[in-house]
Image (tube, rainbow, N blue to C red):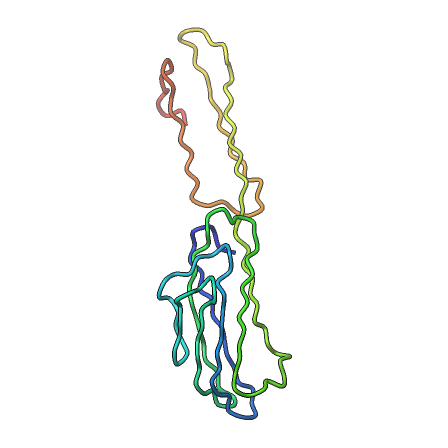
Length: 170
């Protein structure tokens, strides 16, 4: 559940459940809309290609993976602005020289849901027609209608001309 602007790390765990060694395994992952690939963050495999992450996709080649062995392939992406509240689905695919006769344990898809908040800021005054010299009280109400927790919120209120701030009245 990242926020817009956060960097997420995707990890693809490639496991050979056997019974034989798998060869020339190519894993491809098209970086989905809603996230932007972090250049040069691809790692793992015997070789990799990140020249077209959102088109042909990222690709890793694993030359050989023994029965019972596994390896991790990773990349990072930054969550795009304007994606709050959306679910971004990422799916990897693979090919290999041999036929994978049992795909029941494959789980090539992962989703992230981008944090979403709905902040409502309201300001009221206790007397909107005061006389000169009267003290008025401004009240600022901040409400998060969610659905997620808002963090690092800064509310600024500039005292307008014609009004003098009463010290220690916050």
